[in-house]
Image (tube, rainbow, N blue to C red; front, side, top):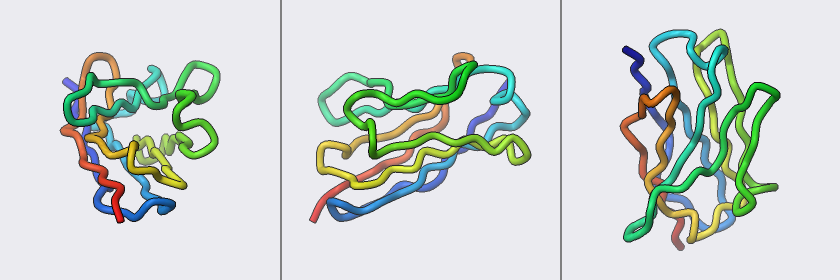
Amino acid sequence: QVQLVQSGGGLVQPGGSLRLSCAASGSIFRFYPMGWYRQAPGKQREPVAGTTNDGTTVSDSVKGRFTVSLDNAKNTVYLQMNNLKPEDTAIYYCSVRGFWGQGTQVTVSS
């Protein structure tokens, strides 16, 4: 059983930045790709970014604004979100091997 605990998120003005964290109960991130997803009100959950066997990837909608990084020593993956837009408002989830974090709300509003 893998536990993923998310932190970060909150309310930020357009153009602002936030960093989300996803801490795993074990060193699973170094062995398996993980993903960041988001679900906006009334919309389906969509992939945002993640790690791959070769590095990281981000969706076109956040390219140039969001980056993913991994701290193996802390078993934690980060999602750095810059230049946030109102359309980035959503609940953000991390996932690996079918396990999901609890989700964290990100609200971008003036």
